[in-house]
Amino acid sequence: MDGSSPLVRELGINALPTVFLFDQKGVLRAVNARNSYEPWIRKLIAQPNAP
Image 1: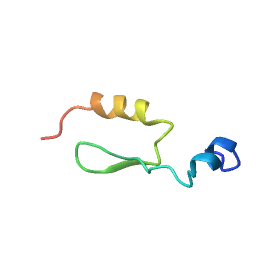
Image 2 (image 1 turned 90 degrees about the horizontal axis):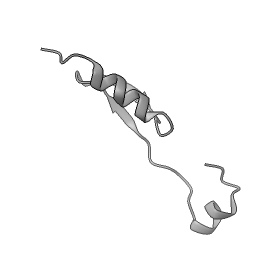
Image 3 (image 1 turned 30 degrees about the horizontal axis):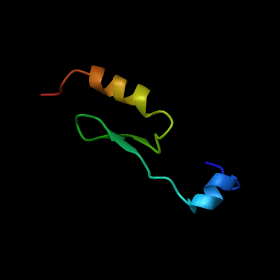
């Protein structure tokens, strides 16, 4: 998000939430996946369950 946007300034937005994605084993797979979380989730769901 561009901080110079009039809407951003008007709403007082100064940061976006961080999105962390973990796999089934608890391994961190992505940080700041705001723009690409859907492909990551599909990929992680398709992985077989670990015993």
